[in-house]
Each structure stands twice: as structure tokens, then as C-alpha cells.
Image 1 (cartoon, rainbow, N blue to C red):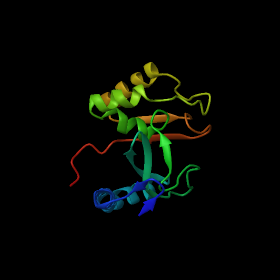
Image 2 (image 1 turned 60 degrees about the vertical axis):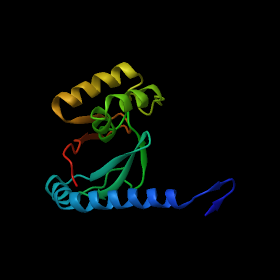
Image 3 (image 1 turned 135 degrees about the vertical axis):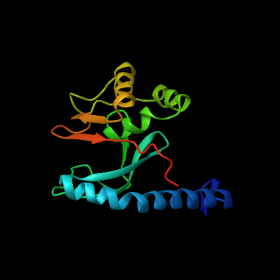
Image 4 (image 1 turned 90 degrees about the horizontal axis):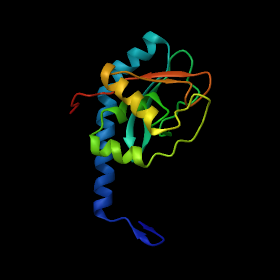
Length: 154
């Protein structure tokens, strides 16, 4: 497909299909337990992946009340979301450092993390306990909890 000065050739198409299939397989495997979790706790549950240096929701299961920010394909910053911190904490060190060096800390609420040192402290806690939290960091009045999927899922 032609788009101004760029041409999307067969390598681009192959990569796009591979990414789509990978997320489709992950969603298929995650759906039964995450659907049960949403029903059991009554809260919205989402499955997110790292997309560049952002968090991207790829699937969503509503609980009794839908969360105010829950949309499939939405992109959020890593530094102020529970899922983002869960992913960031367990990245390879070189990738994590690169992302931290390029992070712009936009203040979204009074609780939003605004510096690398505080984020690194949060990430150390996530690594220690395997659980990430967002306490009104992205939206006032909402708190989120996230855990990373650490095992190979294929």
C-alpha cells in the first residue's frame, strides 16, 4: 500500500500478521481465566501488551461496572498504570533503561509519578512482590492492580 513517501512491502505485512497472530493466541489462552476473574471479583479485567514504549490493551472483560478507561486498543503510558509497571518491571534491563531514559512524565493526577527515581522504586517493589498498583495515578478516584504473565505462554 502506498502512503505518501512510504511503501509497505511484504516484510511489513509479514510482521503485522505475526504480531496479530501472537496477540490472538495470547488472547485465546487468557480468555477463560480472565473472564472467570472478572465474574468472580466484579471488576473489569484487561489484557495489555507492550507496544513500542506504551501499554496497549488487547482484550477486555467487564465486571459488574466497566472501568472508566477500559477500551481495547487504547494506549496508555507505562509509568502511571499498574499494567505498565507490571510489564516494565520485568523487561530486560537494557530495554527498561532505554524506556526510562525516554519517558516524559506527564502529570495526570496529584498522585502521578513524576520522576525516574520514584518509578524505579515502584518497579523494585513490583519485582519483589510480583504485583503492580496504580493508586489514582492515571485517573482520580480509581485504583488498579496488575500482575505480569511471566511464564512462556506458547
